[in-house]
Length: 74
Image (cartoon, rainbow, N blue to C red; front, side, top):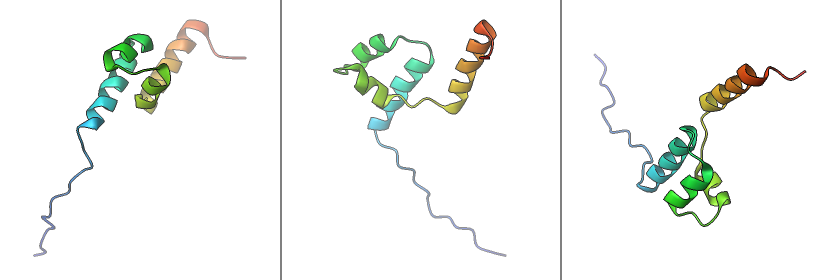
């Protein structure tokens, strides 16, 4: 019988990461970037963009919505 590694595996999680997650989820839900900027109290849009980490699946879904509405590029 082999002994399993029972050492804890800690992830790099810190309180500030929740700020990034909140901003990203607001943008992905369709909230206007200017509104997110005000809620997050960012001084400019560049900072809001810095905090936004769009997931690949979200980008694909948004592109698919575009294609459904306007068709594909020729």
